[in-house]
Image (cartoon, rainbow, N blue to C red; front, side, top):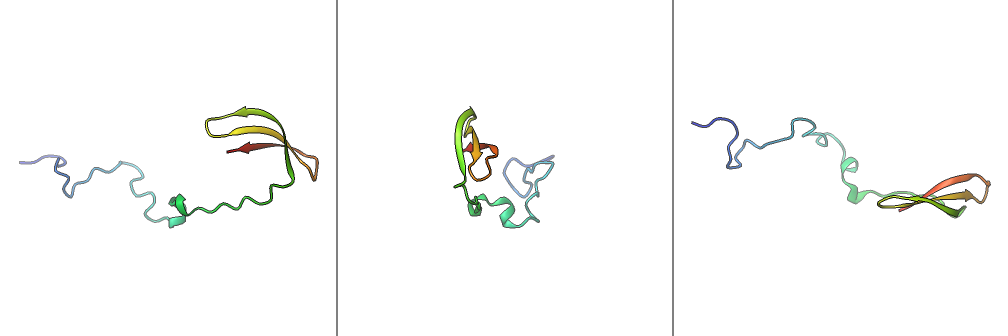
Length: 77
């Protein structure tokens, strides 16, 4: 007599208790990052002035918008 889930991988699959079906009703664009297309816009108006930090995957710089003169932060991946 068998109790609980079977160890043989039958129809009784072990699923996470929460969010096991999180992407079922979402469009493919929501979860498939391979088809993601990012529109970065124009970057020509920005100048990097000095490095202020770094992370695991990027570096962070202080910058300036050359058109308006506004200071900004620029993260370079």
